[in-house]
Image (cartoon, rainbow, N blue to C red; front, side, top):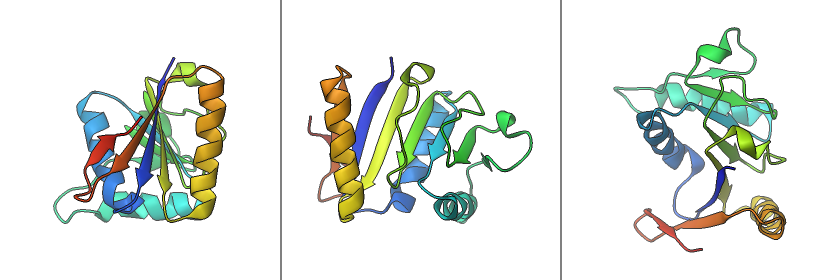
Length: 150
């Protein structure tokens, strides 16, 4: 069963931290799928991953493109795992939780300044915890580094 981590964004934006987490995932040999809550958000993240750094990019595709199964990172709005990803990032209130046996890790990323995202994360945390899933809660410290809180 997958590890489930909750990342509470307090000092950074999703765009500021997601590329680093994706790079770390790829360095482990993992494929990643990012599930956004809306097509517009998926498309904005698609553009961002091509341009987030002047001298590099993260190779990826979206679920609306052909041959996405060959991509190391796939952006989607649905529950499928088109590239056989090992890690799934759930962003902007995306849900529901996918079939957990398909992944090594599922990461819920939520903006602590967005009441709807914060509420959705709390509901999902309680639901998973009640069902016996081991969950971890990570929060950014003042320097923007992640610290495990629970």
